[in-house]
Image (tube, rainbow, N blue to C red; front, side):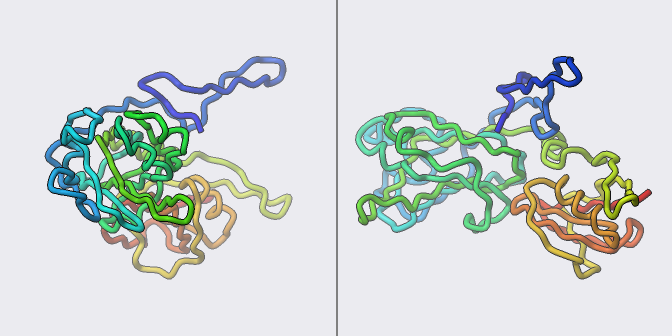
Length: 290
């Protein structure tokens, strides 16, 4: 998928429409500024330490030295499913996570490692960002491997875990010489990941020739609906898709969407009747039908 660097698109889409060349960029590819998040001093942990010189904090010490022997890399002991994580202290809108591989012997161990980001302290409840590190990527000593969260994700925790094994034997030491995180402004992240606070007006054919026109407005951030049993529970990649499903359900007047898992819940509660409680990473929308 396309993503943006600074104010420039990495990929553009050009199409011919009625003989006119048109440049098109979907709402999920808004060009936003990324800034580096300073991780130095934040709380890092890992499943185990290989020795006293390989603590989790060494992966966020700001030192890009890729020689393990120089003491700037974290390293777990042998585990069936090793992991490393950092607590950002608050929710951030994450776009890129960069893993710096070791530059000496052992760089291939990063093959298969995956990045997760989300609001849960238990990292395995958080969604994956991007794709796992490939064998070719891991084969490059000292490589800076950029993992793209597309769409961006609201997260307090960033983690790396690896369950890769070779020839049936576990070869699971997880070494990270540095982990770097780039974030978007939170307000822009909400627009990017939800497409828009007013999800546009559109018409959907339900049973021809009947059409329903509706729009949706963001009611609450970091809250979920609590006063109703959902009409249905779905999993969607984007809130816009959740909105479209609500539009196609005549009884749906509101929905909430969990950013980290994609859970979409439809309700028959109208805007003025919505009760919502705190739930980090959850967004509540009201649907207005016309």
